Length: 135
Image (cartoon, rainbow, N blue to C red; front, side, top):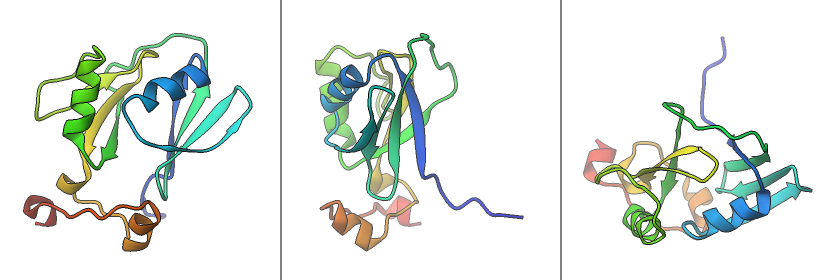
């Protein structure tokens, strides 16, 4: 039996790729890994990526969500709030994008998983873990 070892990517459904890239670009610094015309765009996250897939059928995630790891959760919260996006109460930081995708923002320093030094260096990041995450 194969053992799960990670997630390579997730796909989010959005009505318009260019609009979604602009919207997410207001809150997160990222590089576009590539795209397939107006059907898919790929946002780079080092050794993983987020795929934005065009789907004009509206939906709203209820419990389905994913955790997006960032280097500064407080900065994301502030940017979202300043843009008028509804965000859950601190210390949590969850929101829905305009296409109904439910996103939970987590700080890299506070979670147990770790990127290798090589991946972090390739992303231009030097991040430490909290004592709680190391334990």
